Image (tube, rainbow, N blue to C red):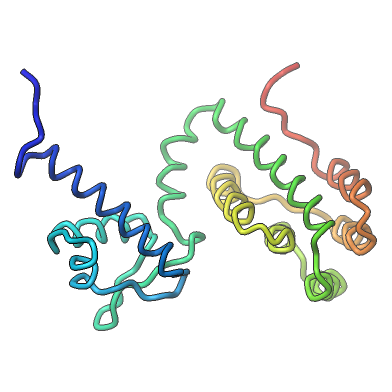
Length: 215
């Protein structure tokens, strides 16, 4: 016997729930909301989406569980930064148990980092380079800080987010690596000259590609 969606059935409820989540995402996009911004109230969302407040409440709970939003008592609901999403750790616990997935992760992360380095070499702005030079000279640079700079210097928000997710996955498995000060000094010099070939050569010299598949 087929299970048809009807009023009050689990199928219908799930459909409304998923649609509510999607519409909240659309509101966030259309309203131009970013991390730190306040979401409309539960009542306003219910009116805008034309769904019951219970559906809105459940959708918001799901988003809060994933770390996408946070509720501040007496203040309202705010969007959180993607770097704090618990979803990253939750997915890492399940997806990355497989050895093949771990190998692919390392290779993908390395490739993304190389691409980001090449784009940063092309796109850095004066203020970006000044910040990098200051921190390299002060020897206050490390792997995490350097690649946060690299991804921001690409001026490609999606790439920055992808790297952060991959980096958090990788850190969950094997921690973060470290590179000698000379690496950052050489990178600074090559980046300042916008010498993409040298930047790539330095990268491959100090961080060998963790190929996930044998030739």
